[in-house]
Amino acid sequence: MEIDQEQKFQNKIDTEEKIEPKDWMPDAYRKNLIRQISQHAHSEVIGMQPEGNWISRAPSLRRKAILLAKVQDEGGHGLYLYSTAETLGITREEMINALQDGSAKYASIFNYPTQTWADVGAIGWLVDGAAIVNQISLQRTSYGPYSRSMVRICKEESFHQRQGYELMLALSRGSEAQKEMAQDSLNRFYWPALMMFGPHDTESAHSASSMKWKIKRETNDDLRQKFIDQTAPQIEFLGLSHPDKNLKWNEKRSHYDCGEINWDEFWRVINGDGHCNRQRVQHHINAHEEGAWVREALVSYQQKKKTKAA
Ligand code: 3HC
Image 1 (cartoon, helix red, strand yellow):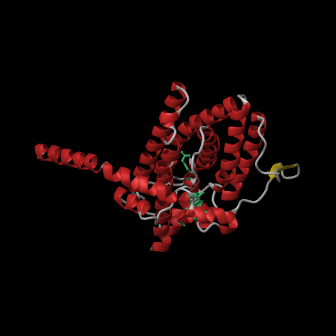
Image 2: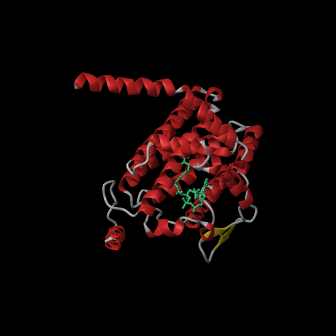
Image 3: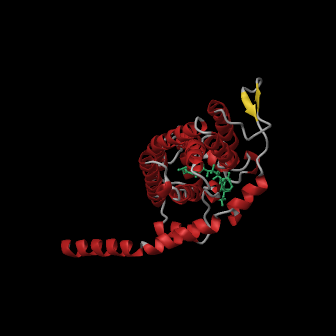
């Protein structure tokens, strides 16, 4: 019976039919999706912190308004994604607990500090840029609600990427000190941005099943290569030097060959020992506790409405 169900499920996937919340699905598919979507949601929400750090110090009203809108968008992305994960039978509370007790991961990049104003540009350009490469592919993921949420998120990420690049362009066409600031920021964020795509395919624990079930449509290494290829001419246009000294166009492959990521650093950061891991989670805990009264007020308002209606 179960085998029959699994075969039918796989046939649906193979014929590009979306899986919807009430459809039968293997437990492992459900678990894998909950893991990926909730970690994706946590990344969006934790990702508000490094940039939020600069809202009150933005150099002009225009820059401040853009940054404020971007950070709010990220909060919204987190909310769509938590709702998406909830359709699979996990509660918001369970997900938040997993984030706060360290059992759920979030994107490693957000454990790096934002030291200068240029970091706001580098994050928009490189981090949102990497997120888009990954998320365009996820628009075709097999789970319907996840796929639909990606469509809207990608539109907003695209604005985020452009504002970041425009900021970097202004700095790299500015004074010598501004150009240096842009270069320093590129140097610090380039490699962590490449790490966002996850470990090499041969080291990726979830890729085989995720590709079979079309949760992922392209592998970690293929997506990373796309990002490397699209970023090289952007760096050139800015007039900055490329942080990867081994980067070289390969005529035969029609792709750039590149240097190796520092994988020790990657595993250290995702396992909790990055520069800002503790600070990010503690800040989330504090904000969550400070917001407890809002959640309580909402619940009692809903209860009151129900009693009135009964
Ligand atoms: N940061 C943190 N953890 C990472 C990671 C990274 N850059 N790359 C991999 N990992 C974790 C995985 O989550 C997994 O951990 P787990 O087993 O404890 O869950 C482990 O390392 C092994 O990696 P796998 O390759 O086997 O994992 P996946 O198949 O899940 O692939 C992924 C990793 C490519 C990140 C995939 O989960 C994915 O595409 N996720 C959805 C996109 C996403 O989460 N993006 C976050 C980017 S930030 C963002 O969107 C905010 C925006 O505003 C900038």
